[in-house]
Image: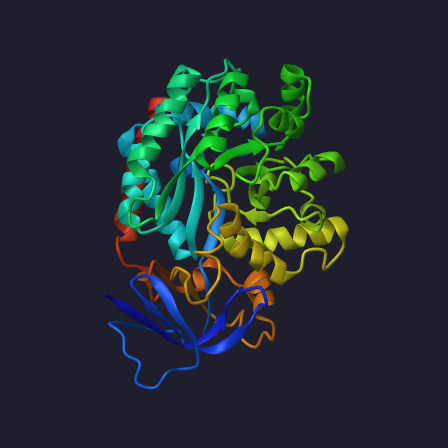
Length: 443
């Protein structure tokens, strides 16, 4: 049995009462066993001194594309559909197992060093085993989906299209091989890209499998007006109504973006308990729009946060997403429309809820997994702030993350990765990115 003690901590539990306390967290075999004042005589195999830092649950990013990390800087200044057709789809088609592994290692390094401990990620159509294998070695917690695409949509390379049955069977085989691997850190979801790139046959099969097995479904929805127009042209329905008609709208559906959703669609999302994955940085850079987050939350919709991919955001830093989430709503609806404490909740507890892991992560309490981060609060831009949530959302940066722990294992210590040399990870990624761009005809 291994044990870890995090002491001298200003603890933000992120529980329902938002309790904060000064004390320590005791961990055994990756699970939190005690939270509170120091216990006399308590010993542990390893000690983390959190003095001068906020201790909070690790961030949960619910919309990421690890495979796109090598595309950073290759797909700038384009709207969504042109971005997909001219850059992202050709680059994804050019990936091989080695480049996918390099992308996953690079993404994990950036995510962990900026405080993200869990992701929901949609990969490309092929070689998803390479991503999962890389994640075993990084220590990151992840729910991974192989991208499903079978429709003859404009601009889709042949390598990114598979017959519906083949695509679904390969996803089920991935789940059989990987779901629950790495001591439960890795899980597998079903990931139809979006309605435009999937036939009705495939989407209905995904819905049926999700009902039967309880598997999460991860997709994009209502990200751009052009996308919605294509869905209406193909189906005669709005994007959200189409998902409902297919049987996909349920508590197991994680829908990224949901920017252009009217009141009826918001009610439908709430009634079906669909989880919305908000990506403000990506939405701004692609010029897609600003999601109605306060309205969705007021209806009871679970809204969590993600950076999306490095191809459309260029950063995977949750601190950027938190600040943007709050300030964009201040512009839309007035200051205080999305308070800082609510944003930190979206980055932790709501992310866990989206993944069905709300009883395991997203909170610091006995019986939860020890996924923890320490944010250094003694930096000049943080010192003296009376409200920790304000400090985290409006002032902190990813570079302020001092310590990251996943399943009780320290993965970032004193601002440095433990399991890998970041310079080696970056050099390998740069090598593969250059080769990938040449294969895609973009370099």
